[in-house]
Length: 161
Image (cartoon, rainbow, N blue to C red; front, side):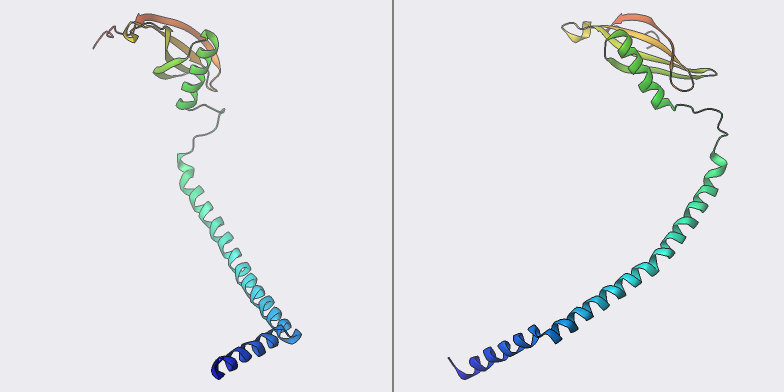
């Protein structure tokens, strides 16, 4: 082995031994703890500012939203919830899967929803027998009444078209 390679190898061994000495390990350990401590301190010093910013942002957002809010009289269901509730009630009462919501009307005392159901499946599908159910729900989306309002074949055009 050439002399330069031997010197390089010996130098690496000496450096390796020195790094394994207790003094060097302790120094590296101390430096690592100090670095972690600095990072933790920096992170903690940023947190209050984030929280403060978040609180201020929420307050601003609440102030902007305030004029849009209605006075709360009782919990009310929105149109989507009402339509889902009406379809669910029809399914439970008739045992048939609802096809589509045909109408949705907000009334003084609640909601009136039209739900279309396939009552009889036929081949071809254009001859299926469909029915429309009128479902009345209160403000919270609970069932008040339901009835079948009409029955027709799928291929029949609606009046007024």
